[in-house]
Image 1 (spheres, rainbow, N blue to C red):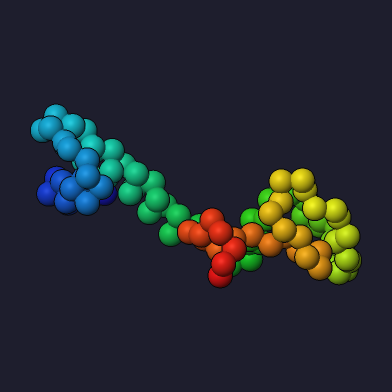
Image 2: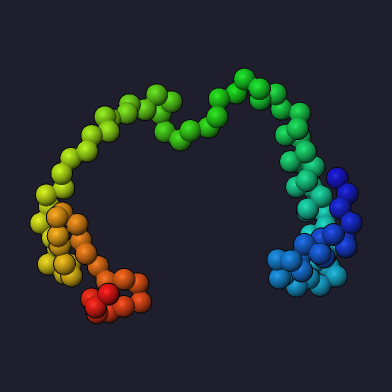
Length: 97
């Protein structure tokens, strides 16, 4: 696939990449080769393909059960109440509100 050098220069400007003339020629060829490779994906039959999921195909799921925390607070925690850590609001170091 042919990509005009002006288009590569425009993309380079958007990406804040400076190019010298030699780099522009090389990058123009490489972008064209990448686009040709990606264009091959249009011909792949994927109507019946399963979506990719990392891990085993049939990963066992555990039951979603709510349990009380009940863990004691960390010594460095500012405050702890009803099973929750209370921290100051962002930007404030005091607890006046």
